[in-house]
Length: 221
Image (cartoon, rainbow, N blue to C red; front, side, top):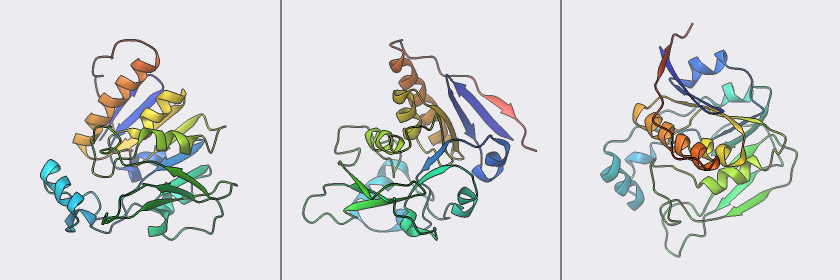
C-alpha cells in the first residue's frame, strides 16, 4: 500500500520509490539527493554524533539509492552525490561550496551529476543549521540550493524527488510555482515534508497555512 497526499500542485507519496515511480508520469526534471550507502550515520564525525542525539539510531544511508533506475528515465536529471555512483560522463556537474571554516572535518563541497548541457557551475552557501534554517533531516539541503538547481532547467514545469526526505525540493518548487512529485518511505520525514510543503504553498499564495491534509490510501499494483 502507498499513501498519496495532494497539496496544491504537489503530489506526495509515502512508499518505496521503486514501487511508486513506475506508476507515475515522467517528470520534466528529477532533482534528488539519494542515500549513498556509505553508512555515514554510524561514523564518528562530530556532526553525525549530533544527528544521532537529535534523531536516534539512523539507517537512512545503509543502502544506496538505485541510480540506474533514475538513469533510465527519459527526462532531465540532477543527482546529488553523483560521485558516489556509476554515472555516465557529463560536463554539466554542479558544485555546492559550503564555505566551511578551517578545521571542519566533513567535505568542503558536494557534487551533483547532471545530464544537462551546461558547464560546471558552483553555488556558495552554508549548511541549513548555520544559515538559520531549522534542520529536519540529517542531510537536509538549503532551499536556496535546490531552487538554484531548478533554475538550471528553466523549462521544467514538473520536478520529481524520489528521495524527498523532509521536502526541501518541494518547498523550492512551491516558491518557484513549479509542480512537484515527492516520494519518501520514512513516515516521520514524510509527515514533516507534508507540513513544510503545505506551509510553503500557503505562503506563496499569501494565505494562512493550510490544515494538515488528509491521507489517501492507494494500492500499488
